[in-house]
Image (cartoon, rainbow, N blue to C red; front, side):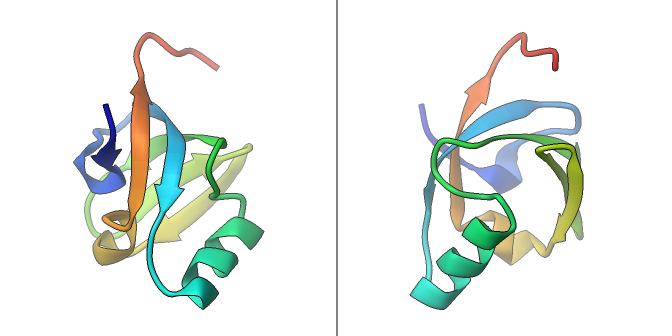
Length: 78
């Protein structure tokens, strides 16, 4: 089941399935480590959205999170 990243709650893990938007935006997120196949954790949902991606913290605006489709990973502990 794919959902927008902005529907995830604090502490939840997800695998990125798709990143939608302008090619320059999709490319920028890929440079930051957010691309299909990566696993991330929502540290703080909302505005701004704080993510843990490969051990790095990234901050995104809520409208940016809605363009990232993820598959929730239940029971993940990393």
